[in-house]
Image 1 (cartoon, one colour):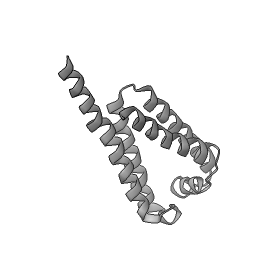
Image 2: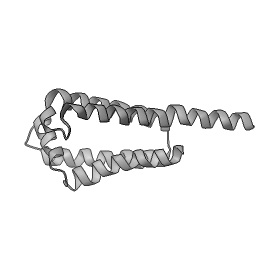
Image 3: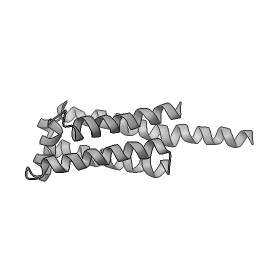
Image 4: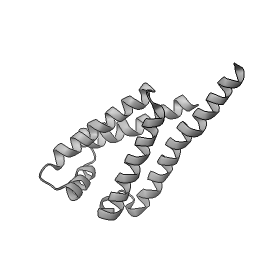
Length: 128
């Protein structure tokens, strides 16, 4: 089950990175970047953020240092959503309610890595 959840989490990063930002299929993301970081390089920065999200997805799938990865995901999503909540709530898909979805994603990432993964570790240790 944890592996399926890991792929679902990676899919969120790929969808947001590739389709929403790199391919610019959701221009609202570039508007948010432009409002927060300035319009001059909004497209370039949005593209780089999208590439970073794709790299995050690859890292998730790789399974390398999963706890570090989960902590970084939680910090990134929390920081991004706090900034958006304060600076550009009018550009968010669900306004300030977006933070609720971000919190659910954070809980899902935490649960997958720190709850499910610990159960799998305990089960393996009990067998040995």
